[in-house]
Length: 280
Ligand code: PDD
Image 1: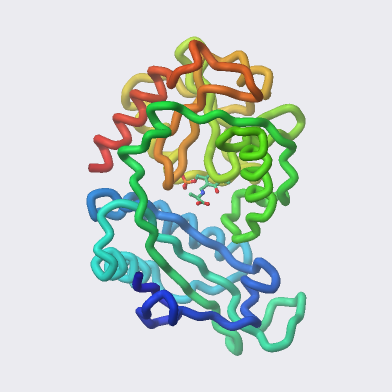
Image 2 (image 1 turned 45 degrees about the vertical axis):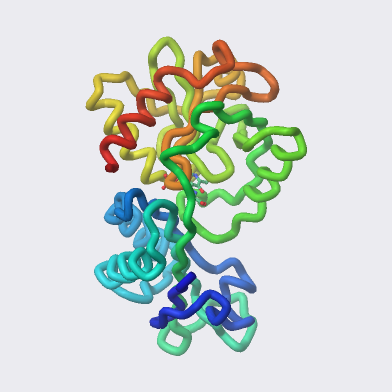
């Protein structure tokens, strides 16, 4: 695999960053995951906009222009012969030889940029036919979940809690309401209505979420953007998640309680189909 590191395209075993990198020491970095389908980058503009916002919220300088970033994505697709999967991008506040909680002067310490590809079959996923089983856990992340930072330890722990329970993922709960999945946005469907949490600092503003809600509205489906409780979710007709690495993925069970008949629901299936059609 060919990896991009600060201006160079190198084989993955030669792709290196400093031990002083603030991403490594402080999780002082932001990232994006953009999907690739049939060799095509999906919604780069949306990901670039969110990246710019994450950077600006953290007073971090963009390492290159968004146009240059698009070229790097395209170059990686070509060099790695990527037809389906993801491109991971990470910007950190760079390597400062003095470990200091205060941000370094960006003139002296430039931000660092790393990108790599990951091949994955997203469209033809067996999980989409089976549906996911999720557990609920307390949301113990920081309060700025709208910034896509690399501090992913708690979501990672959540994924392990789900695995330990024999499930696929965890939905996080704050004040009895679902915030989101460990690395995806969460939805329920009740009486034909699609319900998903409104945008705020409490969740990541998913790029797939924006596209799916747009497609749902275009298809005359009713969308309600509001917080929903975990009890409401367990009582829903169906549920699903969205993310760049899963697209629309049905959820069939929450905390051991089957939703509907325990099979992927029609709304999730239809939205998955629309999303795939629109992306091809
Ligand atoms: N995760 N919520 C969280 C907490 C996420 O980490 C993600 C994405 C999403 C969905 O956002 P989008 O539709 O823009 O992918 C929601 C990526 C895929 C990841 O961490 O791998």
